[in-house]
Length: 282
Ligand code: IPD
Image 1 (tube, rainbow, N blue to C red):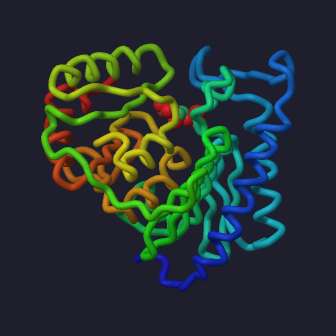
Image 2: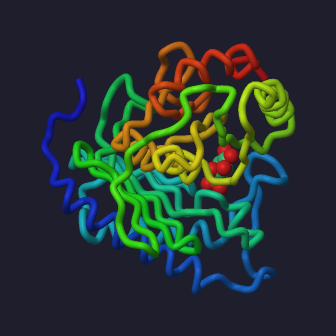
Image 3: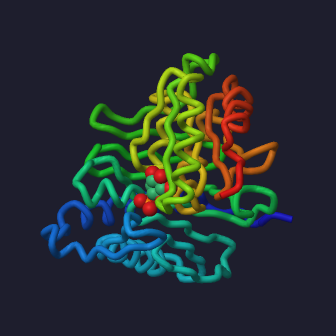
């Protein structure tokens, strides 16, 4: 059974917004010269982590811990703490690290407050989510049951998914893993899908890709190889806007496959992806 405790999502959202902004400030204004970025590699020589990813995660964890010492953490850069409050914060301190490295502005800080939810993605459910993209001047947020919002230079807008219901006219975002043997297969799937859709985008941040489905900037998104920290906050933002998320054959979205579309497109994109090899083994 899932967590039945009642949590104050308004208070959690305040914390997430405040901490995401602080991390964004650090990442923009505290960025050292390129030579001092402290770049290390992870799954392959092109999958990078910078010293700024680590500093951002440390800042986020320390700030949330100061406010809520009983909460747990799951962070991309290694933060793992068990929760005794029922809340676990799932954090990607920079989603789109390669973009950050290249000064390509499509990257975001992603913070989700999650509760246990067996059967959902990674057996967790976000009840609060923030995706903050400082260089795009965009902050996406949601509380479970209260809708999702985008704050940009024009103000704050409530999100409501819309979009294309014909796969052949759909604009689809995706991403690729960094390991060579996996990205070869991912490339084959994208190549097979390309003639069946309007076009494909690879912006470089899974969190922002999923948020962009909620805003109707793309009609759908799919990717293999994403982790809870890439998706948790954005998935809530998207669901609260009416986006359907899932994996293959009725499974929840996962590291194996994550699909997000408007309701009319989900089964069309899902079926096309299966035909295009999105569940083939590596
Ligand atoms: C990456 C981005 C990218 C996606 C990769 C992720 P990171 O996250 O979201 O768009 O294609 O699968 O790993 O590593 O920059 O946090």
